[in-house]
Length: 110
Length: 306
Image (cartoon, rainbow over all chains, first blue to last red):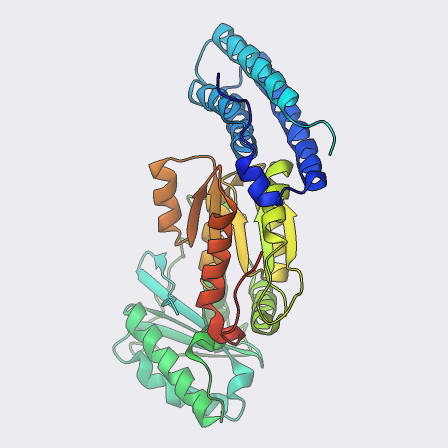
């Protein structure tokens, strides 16, 4: 199974500074939780445009972090913005499940 | 320097328009300027020159846009030399600026027609005033929101002219996700110019309109723009910036790796298109490229370190 996060690129950017990384992780989780909340809202409102936009935004931060499997799920959600409500519900579950893997992989404290 | 030129469509053809800094040609009277510039417009169906205030001379004409623009550049360059000001060709755009907004052009035409301006001259050879409503870019609502007044344009020019003398690089990051903003900041904050060790200035914002305001006020060196922003498309912002100031380095940073997005970016003459995930080198290469293109402005001894 692919690791949930590849930290190589991030560490190249931070120079391995653990405190900078901890700050960035904090921003990532904040942004990610907001994206997931908005995906739930888009599903409830049957708003395809909002769904696609938030899946896209989520994909962007996942790729930047190095959370490539989660990014791939978000990319799929973005592309399948016309899916049924049931299919979208399944996508959110998959995203949330992968998100937990990312959370576990990220060092909790610098 | 990339050739800068503006075309504004009207029903009767395409207009060219420029503003010329009056105070750089201070020894030349309006009458002398008018007489000297008249030959430039030989063969032009319609042209106006307006001495709106002590600071600027506006010229607009219809037809042969590129030819006339080049002649105007040569005229200004020669006039500046006669004033004892030998300038770097790269700085010429500071002295003769293409006007990029349909509403500015319309304002000037109206001013010329209604006599609102302090002093205007119709130097059209046929003397027929057949100006039509300018279309600008009516179909693009987002773009209309980013139009600027003449006063704002002048303020921007003042800020942009200071670029050459800044000791720090100035970046603007337009990105709706805070995490991505911070990541880009982390890459850029290590950038230094080789002849000093000052940290760059970095502004961040999440939306098109706020970014436009910041851009006009601060004239950043390099603007990084995400495409999906909270209040519109990054393409709109990129286009407005490049139209107003082609010297500004605009880099699109997006998770959309689509050919059509790339094509739009190309049409907008952006300087770079980076897809997420990006790495440090990609970003720093863009900054280096900017410093390379402006080394004449900044002394030619700059680079980045990180």
